[in-house]
Length: 170
Image (cartoon, rainbow, N blue to C red; front, side):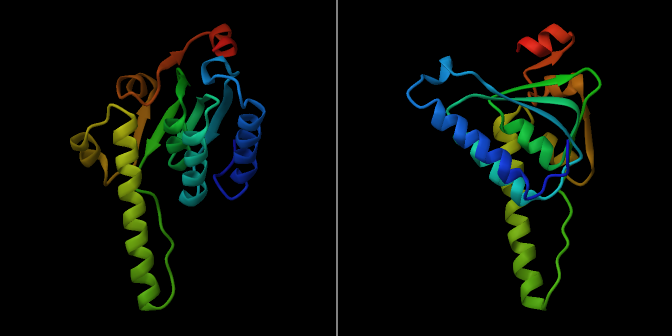
């Protein structure tokens, strides 16, 4: 429930610690790590770091979009091993925003790096969801807001939670 920033490293450390504690337990018998997401996004670098940690986790990581999972938070949700959302939740996928400054060489290098990061993000989303290259291309120049039913259709989430019992027992 915060802006994606470098403080996400603390949550990554928990995932690493719980994986260490679970060593020797088959992944399917491990208690899943549950992440409730309500974030309007933030910085891409910490989001990418957290995505990598989730992807490497042998202990299952479940993500819950409990309101808004925007920008970097959407990528984190998509990285989770199982993904859920509430009826009125929204996902935002977009190309992000960059604040690049410096001399001409620095700006050009930073822009090239940002372009590579956006391409990796696009390929990650397409690879982990039912979003096709064509559909992504259709929306890539806009802020693409996706409601709960469309999150389900597009494979962003595995289920829409419609009861408190379901939310507590997933």
